[in-house]
Image: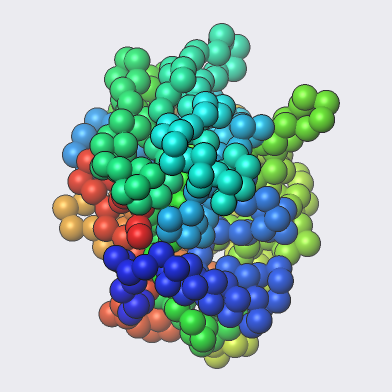
Amino acid sequence: MMPNLIGRRPWLMAAAASTTVLTGAVLLGPAMNAVTATSHWDAPGTFKDKVIDASDLYAFTSPDKPDTVTIVANYIPFQIPYKPYQFDTNVQYDLHIDNTGSGKAAITYRWTFRDKGFPVPSVLRRERQAAGPGSLVEQSFTLTKLRPGQPDQTLIRDGYVGPSDMGILITPGYQGLRQKAVLDLPGGGKVFTGQAADPFFSDNKAVNLLRFGIPFPPLATGVPMNVDSLAIQVPKSELALGGDSTANPVVGVWTTAARKSLNGEYKQLSRLGNPNFNEVLIPFASRDRFNGMRPQDDTGSGLVVESTRDPEQARTVERQAGVKAPAPPRADLEEIYLTGLTTKRGGPLKEDLNSQLLNRDASGFTPTEQLRLNMSTPVTAKPHKYGYLKGDKQGYPNGRRLTDDVVTVNLRMLLGEPAAPGAPNLIDENNPVYLTAPITGSFPYVALPVH
C-alpha cells in the first residue's frame, strides 16, 4: 500500500513524488519516466508538452442521475500538491462523441481558456515573483458545442475554472471554489473545469508488466497526485443518434488537444480513447503519429488495425512473466478496442454490448479506436474493479468508471481474456492499490485535490 502522505508538509510530498519519477527514469530511460500511470505521458510529444497530455478518459452513466452520462477527461498529470497548474490558452481541449460508428464526431464539446488576472492580488503578486511569470493567474473558460452542418453553440462563456489548491493562505475556502466551478448547462446538465485528485489506481505489478514488460514492482511506490479535469454531465438524449437513447444507446468517446501554431491554425497533438491503447498497442516510434490521427482515418492507416491485431507488447509480457498470449491476428483485441463487443461482425466475443452497430439508425460503421459506452446498461449496484471480466457489464470496456482498474483489465485482455483463458492468476486480485483518491457521490465525482 502506498504511504499516506496526505496532510504532511508540501515539501515532503514534492520530494516523494520526485523520487518516484526519478526512479522511473533510472530504470526505464528518459522516454518512459512515468511508472504510475495509464495514459500519463503516452508518447514523446506529450512527455515534452504536459499541458496537452490527456492522462485518463472516463465515460459512465451517472449513478445518481441515471438519465444522464458523465464524461471526464483529465489533463496535465503528475501535479504536485501546493504547486500551481493551468490549462493552456493556445490549446483547444475537445471531447468528441461518435454515435454512428463512422469515426467522425457527431458532437464535440470544446474548452478554450483565457487568463483573467489575480484573484488575491496582495498575496499572489508576492507568490508570482517566487513561482515564475504567469503561474498563478486565474482563468476562465468558454465551452462550445460543435455539430457538423450546424452553427456552433456557446454553452458557457467566461466560466469559472477551479484553481490549483494552494492552501489556506492563497486559496482559502477551497471547497467553495470547487462548488463555484460546477456550472449548469443550458437545456440541462452540468460542467466542471478545474483541479482534482487523480483517481487513477492499479496494482504495481500490473502497471509495470503492461507498460514496460517488467515483472516486478519499481523501487519506489507512487504518491497521490492531482490533475486538471474537464467534466461534463448531459442527458443521454443529447448524445444519442437522433436523440433516441433507447433505439440508439451506444456512443463512442475520445478526447483531443490541439495547439495553435504560428499561422493561427490548430494542430492535434494528443488523443485518448481507451486507456493504455497508445502506449501498449502502438509501437513507440508511431505514438506521436497516433496522437495526431483522427479515428475516421484509423482503418487504412497501416498502423491502428495492424498494431491491434499483432501487439508486440503481448510477446514481451509472455517472455518476462512466463505466460502465454493468443497468437496473432488478435480478433479479440480488434473487437474490444476497434468495433465494440457485438455479434454482428463474427468476432470471438459473442455478446452484443457496446458497438454502434447495435444502434438501430446507425450507418457507415468502420473499425476505429474509441471508448465505447452502452448508455442502456443498468448501473451496477456493487461495481467490480475488473468490470466486464468479472461479469459486471457496466464496467470497462463498456465505458469506464472512476473505480475501474483498467490497467489490470488491459493486461488480462492482452493475454487473451475474455475470449481465451488468458492468465487470470498473474495479478493477485486481492492486492492493494497504490495510487487512489476517494471519489464523491455527485457530479463531478472526482475528489478534491490532494495535499
